[in-house]
Length: 363
Image (cartoon, rainbow, N blue to C red; front, side, top):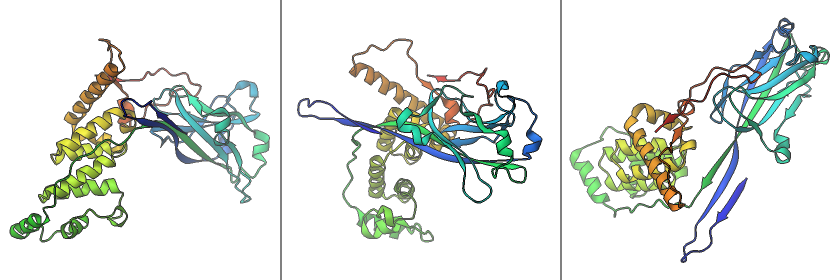
């Protein structure tokens, strides 16, 4: 879903933004061997899959061979997908498939994806919340079907976590210096630096004074290539190439790459790129904290993390001032660092009776 918003013209200046909602999808296969030995556990007793990660959260499949509720008298098996990590009001779509093991392809599918437009995504309120079916399959029918083979069942689970982000205009522009390719080539020749080094994209710049085309570069995506090229340019003193890379990274800054680019800017002394990365990360903090680069940033550059939090506070203050709201002295910034660190909490009671609470770091 994409929603466009435009403000009324004000002194010939227009602005625009859009809200983008999409799903981050992933799947997990779960096989239950020795089904007959699992029977008799009693209602409410379950077999669980290993936890698996989708959309920044941990999930697990629960299978109840004697049903989830005592009132069903073991007439049905129950299957649920549970949120296995900390989270509040996590919105997601689900699909559970019991696989036909005869090869006929007549699988039993319960899908929430087909009903997304009708009823919207399902909301899981807290860790341990579930989506699924108490009466997934009548047990007598299951045991005489092609779904059970060699005393084994096979299931396929798909989860689509809903993510919403706000996109604004790209306003990050850095001036680039004029060409100094002659001086750069003379420096490399006189200093005899890199005579045993393979340059890849750096060699193309030296000979053409142009950045390589993103589709013809080194096979990685454009942002990663620019990050690597910036590091090489800094190492060999190619200042124009370094600034071209900085400008390109500003244009392509995203929640997935900004933490890595911020670390690179700190390491290779790029203050303008660093400032832009801090501002972008501060205004998109939730998505940035779920990236792999943010975990690396926390471990290797703790001082940068402190600067990021200061930028978050500064951005928040400016927003409060521009909206005419007075900031309360008790206002806080909460970062769910348990999620950012990739930690997985213990599963709660499958019935949703948890005794844990969310831990939030305050600044």
